[in-house]
Length: 174
Image (tube, rainbow, N blue to C red; front, side, top):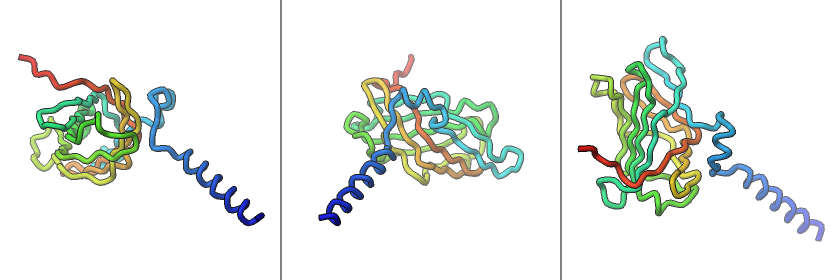
């Protein structure tokens, strides 16, 4: 009987510890603890800008995109130099159908540098993963798990949580 009690206590303790390592976060938690906000570390091929750290400044998730059943994530860094002025665009299954903890499965992915004339400064592949950490009616929080992007400028690694306002669809002004 002691053995069963010991085993049960161990299982309960393991489950309690596992629940502390959650993949979700509320907006309040994220805003209170800036250390959890997604940051991009830049490892350029030139030593001059090695290990620059920046954040995405302009971020939006659109429920609807030009592709049926797809939502669109678009973000840019707002940088001032060609190597730190980047944009990330991801199309994925409808955000409304996703559950918290689920991994984004991009159908289209692009990381690029709008101020660059170098066509090799764009990539459509990445390493790591992005999960849905929380969502509400007008926001989502994405968790970047060491998402690495490599192009002619070097390697860019984004890690942490990113609060994203959600809009219905991108409006083209005429």
